[in-house]
Image (cartoon, rainbow, N blue to C red):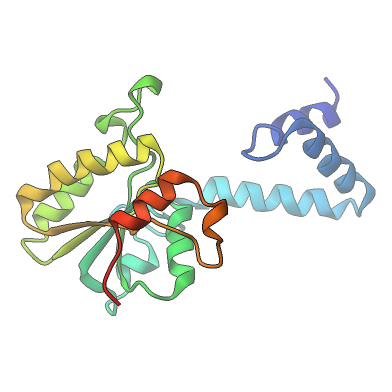
Length: 197
């Protein structure tokens, strides 16, 4: 297998990149300077050697504990549980959330062999227990998929005995949408989650 084929094959394994896009990326790299692929290779090596999971929350970091967990100005009474580390960045970009995070590392999916033991559920429960009442609210920010909903229901049952309030991200109609183009499930969730204005 040629170097072009090997790299195309590796790139096509990434989410959202098919074989045509992978081949286009390889050709783009080869048309540029010889330094471009070397720079990308060095960045990938740094990623592999330096980045790891935070020992507290599971977010990606180059230290043992991430900057969010170390920040004394974060609201330690709020804990937002997400499926994947990239979702931390999505929530942080809003500038609206000042609490802490916990990354599950996936979602429950029995058909794929993913149960609670394959996720960071035990560390989540231990973290809530060790906080001795400091965590007042746990926000379950799992995706609105069947697996995400099942994960949320399971976590709610596990967290509730520890005492914090358990909430879920609101679901509903995206801003700027026309009702005629929104699916029935989304409209139903929006109706169920309505609030007084």
